[in-house]
Image (tube, rainbow, N blue to C red):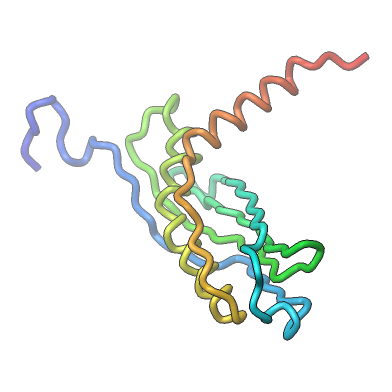
Length: 159
């Protein structure tokens, strides 16, 4: 491939390739149906938790898991609950070592998120409710928050 003016050939450029995407685990519950399907006078209280996990599968491939759990409540009535572990095998090449963890924990889940979001929206709709379209997630902020929590725990001296 031709030199691109920066001394790097196409083979030397950073590469991120999604090799596979899949549902590792998924659960949707509508525990109080058909009572929960009755028209509601007010919108439900939606609670969603997001976590990202990753493990190195080979020298250049990582399994990245986007774990999303959520529920909808109307007062003390649970309308629905879901848990989704959506994963991808992602190949990373020519990423500097000091940038590898942020790429794995920010960019990889950013690529997986739209697919996980659609799975949840379809499941909620198929459960008898209007689809739940989860707002975009700032994975960079989530990564910084996790780093701060890890540093805080490392700074705690046991008594």
